[in-house]
Length: 255
Image 1 (cartoon, rainbow, N blue to C red):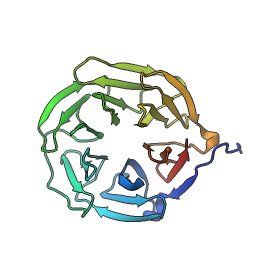
Image 2 (cartoon, one colour; image 1 turned 180 degrees about the vertical axis):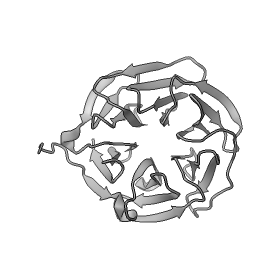
Image 3 (tube, rainbow, N blue to C red; image 1 turned 135 degrees about the vertical axis):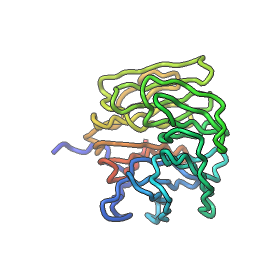
């Protein structure tokens, strides 16, 4: 067995939430908590990595992804053809579905709006009432999406070994392909604008500079990375959260 070089500082099995539970999507909440999305299920989990305490939230339909809005008070979850729902994180009050048309999957906050994959090879920017302000045609269907403060949307497809950067106004876009990143999945940004990308089939995590330059493989299988799905960055603690082992484990690494 290979030696673990940089083991996860914190490790939690998602089966603790319930038998056979796996979590494939997440977002960071204020205070370092995580909102975790059950794989092909109707549950979300608000989890505190420090105390290992959690709240289980039940939705009416299968949820696919989640993002924290800019106000840091609410999250939005996608529910396929049902649209999306906004939830207040203080009292867990859930608003009615917004059915803006399409099949809502990957999502991320985009300024005071959201960027969401809701149609074939397309990203839509809309407000939380479902009013679309712009669309971007994409090369593939975006499975994972993140955004920065400069109107850039980053996405991966999983099946294709590419990381895409699109700008709504068409001023900047690039495609990065790297043989070391097999089936790129989750991606996240830190406060300096560095991009982190998970390689699901290559069992590793990679880093890019703010201008898109590849900076190397920062975590690999010998560090305990195995089939990573989504990732998130805690800027307050300089920690990378990895939904690892096919979503069966939450691993937190100090960078």
